[in-house]
Length: 345
Image (cartoon, rainbow, N blue to C red; front, side, top):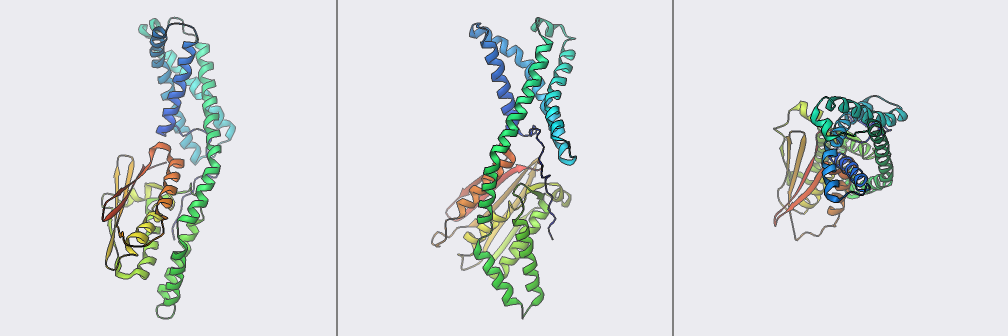
């Protein structure tokens, strides 16, 4: 039975400062505020730009170090329940504390004193604390705004992940095996039970790559009973050790709908042997998964392929922002889905 590792029901309210998209938004937002503040003084644009470049050296350093510390705090909050008020307070105090540290550190150097002769330490503390509070509120409200979209994505996933024909065919397969091979029939029903138990979980739930592949093999085992020797699989996971498989995190039921599409569009229309190629690689902290199947242009099939892929693309965006991508490659005789996402969330 597949073991699924669930994220806490109450996700941390500290922004995901490990995410590239969040880092970019914070740096861009703070830079715009500083630029507008300098421009409001009425100086010429050349002087405003010069002052902005000098101020950016200090502002960006405060932002990056604060983001690094908040990233660590968020990861801690995932594994240790922390009051919401304390998390919000951390978003205010950490930038202020970082600004105090950096001002004390850079204040030892003459070039810094020359660059900022009229630096108001109190103003910097208030600015960084208020900025931390505003950014925390922005990302918290953004997460709440996405909640309806996430709920809609879950409803679409329930409709698109496992087609009704698969359920009916699997039950018919189990019924046909009850008399001649009861043990195999029991195994089919157990695999179906595992599949639908995972199906009903929250789409934000994370699982290990090991367990996701185990679930996919259960699904493919059921399909192989129905399709026989027509369904052939070519797995390439040699680069990953068993420890890697257990440590890498993947959204639950991310890969199974892609394999189901490959079976539906690549194997079912085929009169002969059809092979599905699954290639999984790890590079630094990124995972790449490729699923390739043959194409049968004369086959008359429903056009649900794009809906399922759009659903997966939406889930990746909600979970990883800009750090994950889904792309496809088409040719006259093959269709390939390529996934990229971080090994840890």
